[in-house]
Length: 577
Image (cartoon, rainbow, N blue to C red):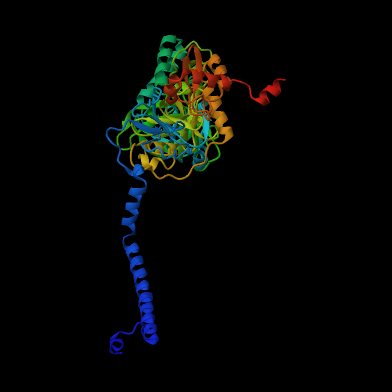
C-alpha cells in the first residue's frame, strides 16, 4: 500500500485543466490579433519595395536592360516606327502583335526631296485635332496695299498772281479767301500812272497803229503780252486810242482763292503777290507706304481713297509719283495719288485711307516658262497664281513649311517658297502665291497644321500621346492613351491611294492578290506602299519590306499562298455565274 501511496495521480483535476485551457485560448486570440496588425503595418510600410521585387521576379523580360549582344528586335508592321525589345508588348497605335526582325535590318523609307518630316495619325486623332485639308489650286489673286495720308492741292494747277507793273490798288473785286473765281474773271484794278514803261508802250502801240507800222505795232503788242495784259484790254486801247492809267488783273484759271495778299489802296511794286488760286477739280493724296510694301508699288497702279467724313464713298485715281527718298523716322515712303474731284468734295487737309490694288504681273513674280499650255506661265497671263491658304503655312523663321497629305492620315512637312501675302478677288481670306515646293492638286492641311507640326517636334514619349509611341529601343513602353483602329472606309481609301501609285500592270496584280502571303491578315497597301519581289519569275506583293526575307526564305510556300489568294472567293464566283 505504501508503494501505491507514492505514485503521482495519472489525471489532473478537471477544474484546473479547464482553467489552463481557457487561459491558453485567450492568449492565442490576443496574440493572433497583434500578429495581424503587425503584418498589415509591415505591408503598408514596405509595399513599394515588395512590389518592385515582385515585378522583377514575375516579369524580368519587360524591364531587363537590352544586352549588347542582342540580335533581334520587335516592330509593328503597320507602324514601323514602333520598335521594342520585348515580344510581349503590342503596338500602342493599332494594338497588333509585334513582328520579329534582326537589329538594324529595318530600312527607313527615305523622305522625298524637300520633305523635312513625316507624321502618321490615326483617324481618331485626325478627328480629335479637327484636321482639314484643301487642294492647291490656281486662284485670281491680288495684292492690296493700304496707306494713310492727307489730301493736298494739286500743285500743277495752282496759279500765283502778281502785279506786273507798279501802281496802286484801286479796287479788289475778290476780297476774301476761299472765293470761287472763273477763268478771266476780274480780280483787281490797278492805277498804273506811276509806271511810265507801260504808258510809253501803249502810246507806241497807238502811234504804230495810226501810221500803219506793222513792225512797231507787233513789238509793242509783245511787250504788253509780257506784262500779262489780255488781248481784250489791248484791243480796247487800240480801238479808243486813249492811253488809260487803269489796268485790270484777271484770273488765269477757274479755281478757289487760296490766299489774298493785298488790300485796297495798297501801293505795290512789280512782282508783288496779289492772289494764290488753286483748281480743285483734281487733288493729290500724299500717302505713306510702309517699307515692307515698297517693292510692290509702281507708277500707274489704280487706287481708291476714302475719308472719315465720307466713309462709304470711294474716290478712284492712280499712283502718279513715288518720292525718291525714305523717311528715316517712320520708315515709310511717300507716294502721290491724283484723284478727280469734280464736286470738290475732297478738301485739302482731310485724312484719307488709300488702298492700292496690285495685279500679279506687277508684283515681279515669275513663273518658269514651260511648254505646257495650262502651265504656270500661261495661267499668270490670265491673272491666276498657284496659291496656298495663309493658315496652311507655318513660318519657322528660317523657312516656311506646309503639311501635305501624302496618303490617308499621313502628312509630310514640305519646305515651300512663297510670294507676298495676297487676297482672292471678290472673296475673303488670305493666300500666298506658291513659287516652289508643291504642285496643283496636292492637298495641304489648313486646320490642325500647328498640331501636326507640334507632333514632329515633341520628344518621343510626349509624341506618343498622339502619334502612338516612341521610336526608342529598350526600356518599358511609353504610356499612351488608347486609340481607335482605322475604320473600313479609311482603310479602303488608303489602299486605293497606295495602289494608284503603282503602274497599271502592278496595280492589276496587286488587286488580284489582295492580301500579303506572309502576314495574311494585312491588306496590300494598308501599310503604305507595297513591297514587290519577284520569285521564280512571278511578281509577288508584300504588305511591307519587313516580309521580304521570310517570303524569299520559302519561295514555294509563298508562291502557293499567292496562288491561293488570287483565287476568287465563293461570293465572287457566284457573281460571275
